Amino acid sequence: MPPTGSAVLDFASPFHLRCDENWKILDAGPSLVAHLSNNPSGKAFDDLLEVLRPEIKGASGLDKLAGQLILIRIKGTKLILRGQWQKLPDLGRILLCSPWITNEGQMRETGIKLNQLGPQDASGDYLMLLIAAQQQAQDLENLTNKAKAREASLAAIVEHMEEGLLLVDPKGRIQSANPASCHLLGSTARRIVGSQVADHLKPLTTADEASGVIEWTVHPEDGKQFKAHGSQYDIQTSHGPREVFLFRDVTEEERLLQMQRSFLSMVSHELRTPLSAIQASLALTTAGSLGEIALEAQEVLEIAARNCKRLHHLIDDVIDLERLQSSALPLQYSSFQSNELVLKLQEGLTTLAAEAEVELIFQDAAFEIQADPGRVLQVLINLVNNAIRHSPRQGAVHVCLEKDEEWARFLVTDEGPGISAALRSRIFDRFCQLDHGANQPAGGAGLGLTISKQIVIQHKGDIRAEQGPDGVGSTFVVEIPLKAE
Image (cartoon, rainbow, N blue to C red; front, side, top):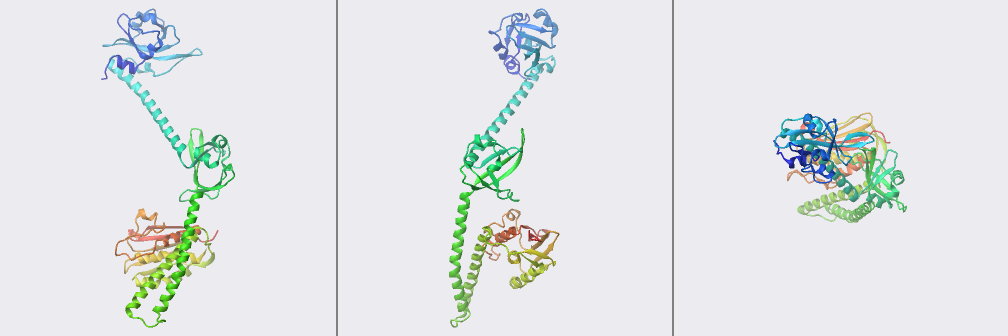
């Protein structure tokens, strides 16, 4: 049972009034005292309060109305109280009220509806109900305060974020703009709000399916256009549906990326020339054109030649990747038969598979494809080469070609240790390599899959890594359109 007394009443019912047997006021709630001219303690009930309903004469008439609804006016004020009075053990006569106000002749209640609690015989039970009602009001206030705090936090985040943020209505009008967007657009929120978002952001691309990123041309007030990356999505607000536009200036990023590509391209070309000379010299020497050489020296020269060849392939990969990513290597489309790819794969990789003691198994269906045959073959060579390298001796690599109404599909499956689900999402990143321990043969630089992905993307296709059949090994799936758009 909760504690009883004035402290509890002040908390639970700030409009309470407590009287003795002779209807002299003992104390009153803080809200009620605030509406009286002075402290009412010791004064008669009739001197301060007037019973409006039901009509009775004098405070003594209240004895017959215990537990019933009554309306009381504080004399000299417009405040009307609605409540009940009870005679409670240890508390005396107590009037528990909530305020009413007059509005064009109509009275309406504000605050907690204490009259709905009903009469109680025990002071503890009644106070428990009062405290519960008060707690509900407090909980509601706490939730409101938390919502306001969250709203303030969100507003602070939007205010200080580096990306521009525009809130747009269904008609394309900007409803709000954060400081970053004002800075990027070279204007003020007052000038931006109400204008059309299409006047400021013009899309260069549709949203990327994987990342959702959109490229825009931004048109600031000073006329100096620049490229921005961002996203666009729908939200539901209390004012109806809205669109959110997030965007950021990528001018500096693209400048740095271009510098990186130029540097790599320059280094690659500068390396290729002397490397070609070294390869030619090694070829002449190992062929005996410069005279007979010892067996031990022959072996060393062959190792050097192999590593030169490997380095040459790496340089070619770097150059290819940079050209693909900068769209400087356009596709050469033509129509060809799928089984032509199989024949070229067999010609190019049968020896490698035999040296690794891995069997190549082809399951091909003859169909026509419109694509760049050289680039598609490059993708398949990369995938089959990787599969051979990661397969155990006496294992097998399966190459399957199939199609449906719109897509050509190539599947390369090995019997190796497989790729974890976490790594599958980044296996196509630059320089990403699998580490299967000391027994794993040395691989390339980790650019083959990155190049393959770029080629497939240029064909408007898809490439992905999956778990192999029955959980063994890995399967790489390549899908490209049967017909060029």
